[in-house]
Amino acid sequence: MDWGYLLAAAVTALGMAGAYRAGRHTRPAPKQPPAYCPCGHAISFHESLTGRCYAKDENSEYTKGGGLRTVYLECTCRHYAGPELINALTMRPLLPIEPPANPES
Image 1: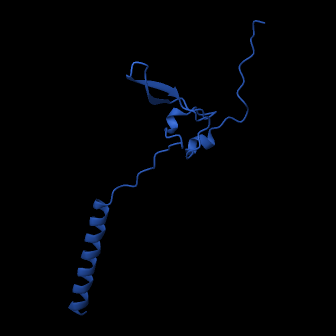
Image 2 (image 1 turned 135 degrees about the vertical axis):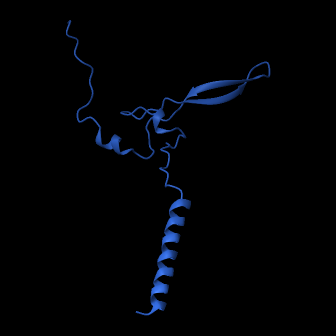
Image 3 (image 1 turned 90 degrees about the vertical axis):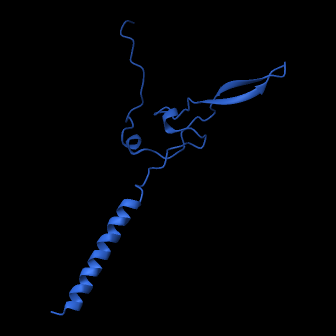
């Protein structure tokens, strides 16, 4: 066996191991993109079945005296249109949800 080939194999193996280790420690973990609706609110502000947005939008308006006040308005979004989470696709009810019948009447 020639020592040149053995030395080349050892240098190559050390180089590959070092590159693998350096790449594993410097690369950040992939992050899941946040689920935002086009209205700008996260999925947590939307009702799970209807998709209605319950977030409050903050608007500023001038008063009669020339002051500035903050007014909170309901978001006009009526359906969540952002990326769906996997459990939202698999856990939808099969039948429509209806209120229970009144047993007293």
